[in-house]
Image (cartoon, rainbow, N blue to C red):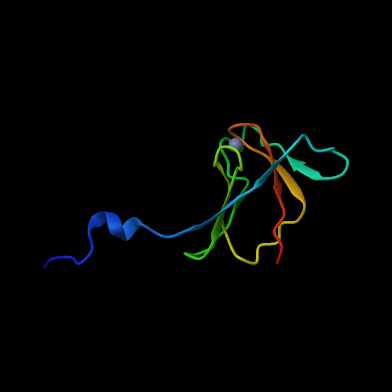
Length: 96
Ligand SMILES: [Zn+2]
């Protein structure tokens, strides 16, 4: 029996992607800043269980994935994450 789908097309899922805002060095006493660490490696910082309609959050500078498969209603407010690849500070502020 011949499959209607090629092997490659099955693997493609359309993910939403949001590029984060890169900001200058934040003042550490005003915001929560996540700076990674050895145990985190290349990240991501956040890993959700979202399905095909979930969202990936990318570094605004180098497109590195900092949040993966987050559900649409994920509540992440006013956090600054340091990119694990290019060291840029990204503002993560999900508005519901
Ligand atoms: Zn980056």
